[in-house]
Structure formats: structure tokens, C-alpha cells
Image (cartoon, rainbow, N blue to C red; front, side):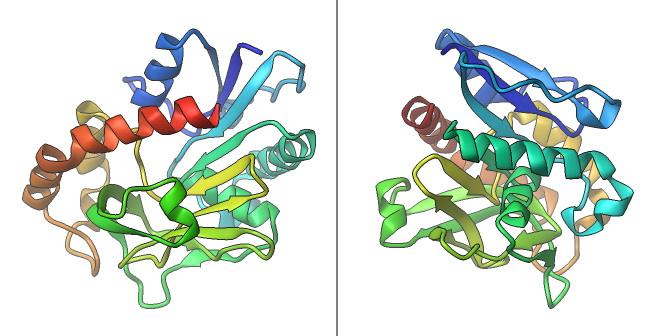
Length: 227
């Protein structure tokens, strides 16, 4: 098994570091963009894993994004086949939705944009260091689905990671982001800066300088273990 499917929700000018790492490890990473009308592929035996990336769409508004319904059914099929499945931010929310958990805005209208402490649960210590700072950028969050195990909590959005079975993991945070990606987000998401829960650009830049290398090294180790 040599292929990793990466389900995309935007067309960035740069490749995320998770994809770059998987390619360096010998995987063929196939990017699929359903929002552009690209068809989701058949689940063949050469697929080693699937990652569903983040994006600006909202799972709570599926009528506006009908291709997300197709992605939800695809994610369900991936889980039924026992193929490792990773969801990041929107991708994690989509997995939560498939598992009948609520995905919605923060009840106090908080928005996450910056670097925040991640607090592993007892089960989460098998995946995360006890002291860990991660990048988050989201206006919605997920409840932990029934039958899943919460792996990590956060301050702005309480649920940051869960595992379902042993081959499906959802993150609310963003370990994949490079400096060019953060630069672009700081422009595209500038309307959120100043909302409750967000950090200033200066705080985000300090967070990147302090924590990016550790976060990236952890993500590479995670991908090697998970896929």
C-alpha cells in the first residue's frame, strides 16, 4: 500500500508539511478537490490512508456545500474498510458529523486563531506530550462522538482531538501549517482577529517562532506512526 489520499477544500499556493513529509517517506499523495467537481476515488487495496484537510466551509451548513455530503459518505466507507483516516479541523468536524456528533459555532461566539495549549487526556498521553502548544484556526468545533475517546482538550474550543476505534483520528488544531500558509491565513482571516479567543498577529508570530519546530517534529512522528 503506497497511496495516501488527501481530500482538499481549497487550492493553496503551497503544499502543507504533512503531505511533503509523506512524499519524502515514499508515499504517493493524491490530492482530490471535490469542491472543484473532482470525483472521490474508489477505495482500492493500494491505499494506505486518507487525510481530510481543513477549509473555510462549515459542516453545519451542508446545504451550501453539497460535496461535503459526498465526503461524509466517503469517510464512512473509509472507516468501514478499516483504512487509517485522519481529519484536520474541517476534516475532523466532518468525521464527527459522520459519527452523529454535533458540529457548530462556539456558544459564546469565540473564535480560535493563534497558538494555544493542548491538554492531553489520559488516553491522549499515548499520542501527545504532556506540555504542548498547537496552532488553531476555527470558528466551529465538534463534540466528542459517542463511542469515541477524547484525546485532548483546549481552552477556546474544549474538544481538540478524538480517536474512534484505532484507525480514525480527528484534530481540531492544525499541525500541517507552514510559514507561507500562516502568512496567507493572517490575511484571509484578518476579519476574525480581535474576536473573543483570537490572538493578534504579533502573538501568532511569536507562537510560530516558539512552537513551530516542535509541532512539526511531532506531526512527522505522528504521520509515521499512524500511516
